[in-house]
Image 1 (cartoon, helix red, strand yellow):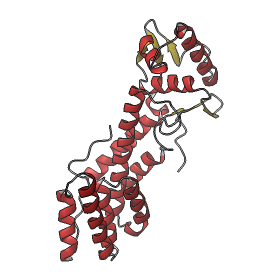
Image 2 (cartoon, helix red, strand yellow; image 1 turned 60 degrees about the vertical axis):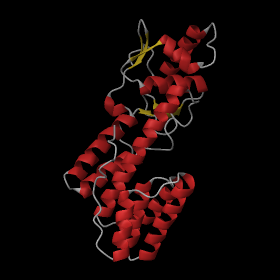
Image 3 (spheres, helix red, strand yellow; image 1 turned 135 degrees about the vertical axis):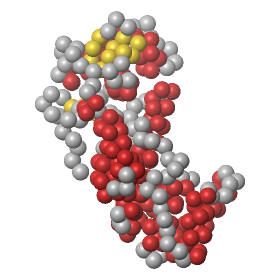
Image 4 (cartoon, one colour; image 1 turned 90 degrees about the vertical axis):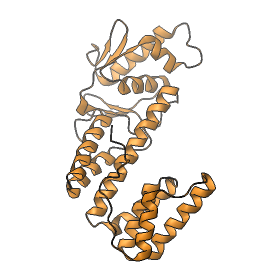
Length: 267
């Protein structure tokens, strides 16, 4: 799926920005990438100088820190084609990155994800799958994967990656509700392998397998989850998985909710 043409900044994967001629650029230096990532995460807000120094030099900012940040800003402006500082603005208290919502991939992700959730809530899974597919397609790997960890960057990465899983789960629910069980089984198997303690992915895989006549395989997924939870956490599966397991054992029809009651929102 092609990326929306308005996107100019990407943080859902390696950090990139697009120059005025439409060319995508990786940011070549670690400090430049960290600076850009912090400014994009806090887009349209002034990030104080002292906060930038802490993000760029968590251990001990050098004496020349202000001059160095000015140099990094100058480099970023050159790549952006922003010599006058209209986009990356110098303020009295710090720097501000002016970014319209449709130019940042994370903001477009939020919009598609929210629209998909609304479509699920109103019982239109085909529409939900379209929006959520667009949301998931914006991801190119872990958020800000090429940015050196600081406490703030690590926390933001975890938050963004969790929202990715929320969107992926809703996309899968929409697909199953649309009857695409066979098509989604490989994706679900990969997600269960990558996230073995995420019960809702197991629940969806069990549903897909059962609906395609693979009852024994569906029950095997449940048994494996029970073993993993007991070994790792000393727990039994949650109520949703246990209900589904009983349904499969009894050979009854599965009723999968379009929205998991305890699921987080996209934002």
